[in-house]
Length: 171
Image (cartoon, rainbow, N blue to C red; front, side):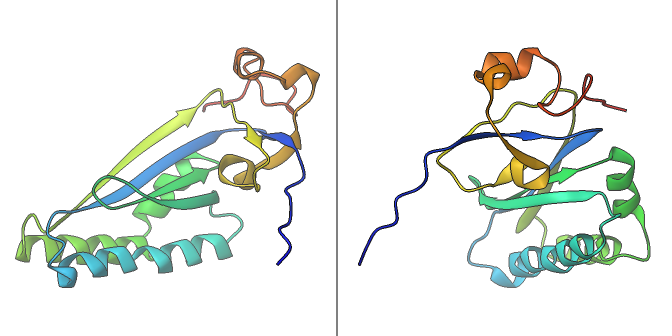
């Protein structure tokens, strides 16, 4: 079997406008109770499907990782208001999932927890070396690293993303 060698590359991301990073995860406190945590885990798929099918939803991209206590979903949003609108909409998948979680949590307290953190980003720096396009570069645009964006310090100090014409907005 021939091994394919990755093409050497150095890329970063570029985006215009507001950038919101939303982390949401679950903490599985009782692994032996999949009847309690598995429905919480499965509830995310319909929400992500719904959001990715709607280009105006505000969700630009996501990745799933495993954290210390369970899965963590990193989401990239184009607007804090769009994130809030989705979370509070009675006509979309989030509200029924949230209601179901609260009902299950009351019937078996402590079996599974959920958490989230929201960051409105006014500067973002990224670097991908010999890597597939992922994370922020996949959610926005992947661009080659150039002379003005050769170091992390230069990318962060500019206060701009490589392709923008001014400071990144955090409305």
